[in-house]
Image (cartoon, rainbow over all chains, first blue to last red; front, side, top):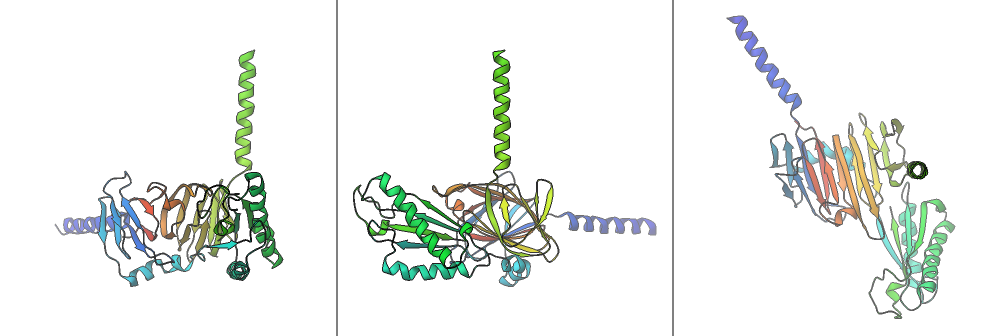
Length: 201
Length: 150
């Protein structure tokens, strides 16, 4: 009798232990990004059904074998659980735009000042990749604008290298007049289209 | 005879295609922060991760006790993993001129912080993350995942 009880208790304990160890429960929490923006995630079962959409700060869901359900987490729990992952976040990427004088690979005076900001942003990163994409307005032909857009990108790359940054971490390409910031008719001069976009990450 | 020539041409082409693929793997991201022990599993090897290490499609990112790692991808999405994590970068394709592509990762264990990038601005199916119990569709946001919470 006593032995039977002991066995039953042991079995019960085993069942609890086993389930405790095998219960797969995944946790998902939406947080604001580095700009404070919040989008959404939809959490579904592995077969894509039973989805729940989270789209507010610290909205949370948990998923297990039985499906996906809403849950709550405190900011304190988030810090305890995810502190080390959050601390390992890379410096967020940044985009800059520099403008050029007409038919020229020289920056406008405002953009010469802005260049300092670009350089400072790259220089503070422990490791960096920079993409410089040159553009023109639609004032000339493609066969003229394609090389001009690349020369603009190469000029900015050279300015960064002259300040001590590494050539092979900076990539320069030209897109001619194909991606205007401001759409215009062909042949139109547009200062906002004479630019390089600098993508720093 | 003609068939043999055709077959050998096809074989040569296949060999070239395979070699070209193997010789030219596309870098999809870069390690920006790291605390040891953190490794990258690639083609059966386990390489210690360092700041500046390149990351490729099909890499598996593994952190041990006390380890962590931060990666920035070509579409400007950010991943950072806490200790005892294992994350497989199953698929990553990004066309920077069209600003679109697709991204599929699998968090097998541990914790991961994600800040989505240009790929997740596209269709809701463009960026997906799997865990043992769920699949996520991502639309332009930051979020956190913990796998195996009891």
